[in-house]
Image 1 (cartoon, helix red, strand yellow):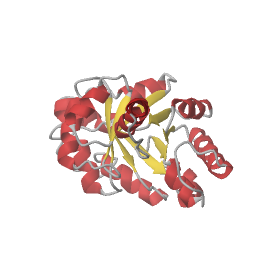
Image 2: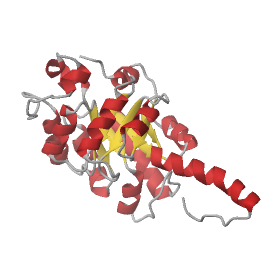
Image 3: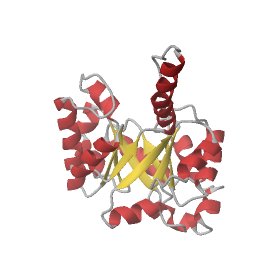
Image 4: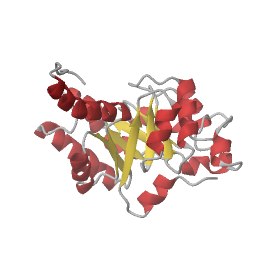
Length: 262
């Protein structure tokens, strides 16, 4: 079976960068895959990506050694198993708030006897190799999103779940749960302290810690406090940011009105 490069990098103590895909298009996914990200995550929760688009995006990512990941819409076995069968080498699952929810998530992603995943790796064997079913339990990543006060309260129990590789912090939902206005790269002490607590607890359990970020500076900061894995924006936001950077200069020279949005 094709090795999961992320697992090897983390075992070697490397910090890794993840890209985020919100545009439902194979070509844009292919462009991102050729930029050097360690992994790319297709967002099926808050993006506009459906299953059919996700499959074409997974195929596009496969033109490189970038690890293909999916953030599923919810902790639902049918969706989890379909994205794995389609060739996702890792799953980020939102709103895991308890040990029971973490156990259900992991079970849906692991073949028996470790879990309850149904057999049918229709594209996973094309991407991963003919022996995929034999090694999938060891290679496929499971990351539970920790983004509420409830999840923080049960974090030790969540991290004790066998087969869970680690966690992924969603700063916006975490901020909302803590009564703070959400946004990228939080500086509010309540949220910053919560993030530190999450990564410290995760490291005590020898699990992987990831987080969503809005700048390279914040990623470096998160790496410095213990995170192994960080996402830099999304391709949609990068495109909007670059257009927003370039266009104002032309608008000024032509006398045109500036846009107030991205």
